Amino acid sequence: MSLNMENNSEQNQMLSRKDKNKSNTSKTIIISLVGIILWGAIVYFGYTYAKDYIDTSIKQVQQENALNIQQLTEEVQTLKLEVRNLTDSIISTGLTLSNSTSIQDQIEQRLEVLDKSLQDLENSLRILQEAPNVKD
Image (cartoon, rainbow, N blue to C red):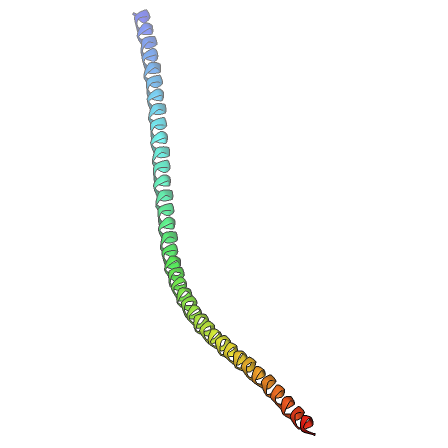
């Protein structure tokens, strides 16, 4: 019986080692799974946080761009109005200059007519001055 007991005790020790090995393996698997789950959760929440941050930043930039575009549109409208006013001023100045030019042309034509008349008068005066000399 002592042999039997020794065999039983050896079997118990072997069973206990197997249980310990199973227990250690189970613990290792559980710890590994918990670690993987934790890393997965950290990666997921990190990704969602980064995505939210980037989306928020993009929205802010879009809002700033919309404001800048609105300001630029207003400035362009103001510049268009100023250009239109300048164009109108240039056109009216051009008309004034062309009127001045036509007036100047008319004055020059009148001066030419007067010069011609003056030459005719000078010729007539010369003729008149020569006429008394002929009578003497």
